[in-house]
View 1 (tube, one colour):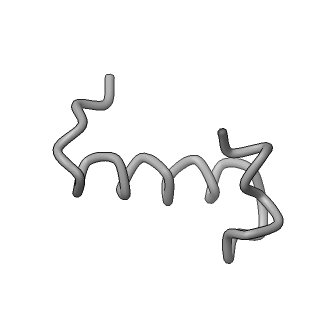
View 2: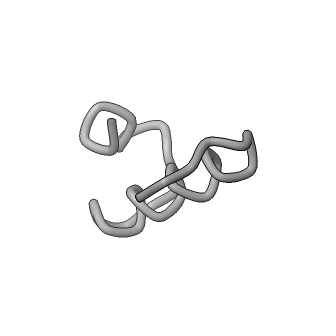
Length: 33
């Protein structure tokens, strides 16, 4: 997901993009493991 959304996210690297996606998922009530 992070690789696909990389150009849409305000992230400098893939790790930052992953953290943003993880935070969004958690705010929607999705359990991230």
